[in-house]
Amino acid sequence: MMANLSQSQSGTRPGLFLDRDGTLIEEKHYLSRPEDVELLPTVGETIARMNSLGIPVAVVTNQAGIARGYFPESQVAKVHARLDELLAEFGARIDRYEYCPHHPVEGLGDYRIDCDCRKPKPGMLTRSAAALQIDLPRSLMVGDRMGDLEAGANAGCHSSLVRTGYGSSISIDFDHESLRFLGAFQTLKEAVETWLDL
Image (cartoon, rainbow, N blue to C red; front, side, top):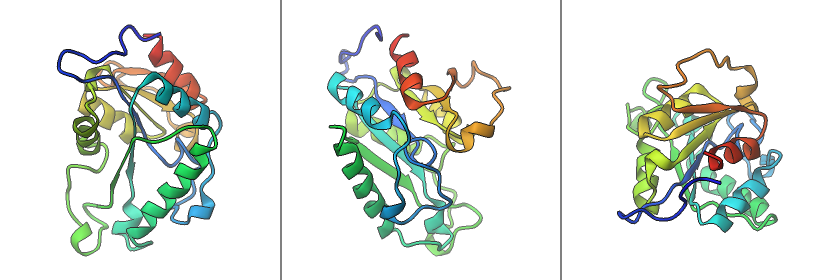
């Protein structure tokens, strides 16, 4: 079990940051319809365990389909509402959702900006950490892309790759130390258990 799950003197605690598409739910190219949301194996039970341990769980997701005009921003809340419904069947909940609707090159109108939130930048993680009183150096970012690992590292977290979504084809021949990389795992459950055992 992780050495210390309790709050630090500053009142912060470790947290779990999760990419959405390909990590929590099946990767479906620019998913925007709630009816297309499908949980990946072990996700519900793993998040429920985090809830029971008092570890805050935040979803941080790039949603460039908004910037590209593929779907309206309002669809994100509907997708997250459906994800909440599916997780509730396991007694699980997400404590905070953060999404980036921007793209620096392909974005349309106000969405075309070089923001601080689009992964691999750490803005979504740092905002969630402030809102949930998360201690970033004791926390974990899990995703299926290099940008997820880099976002975690840029925020000061440990990082883990899941071999779901795009993670099934990513080489792990990179600088593990700079990413505070804990490994590549077949499921979210395996990634989280390794972190808890640090």
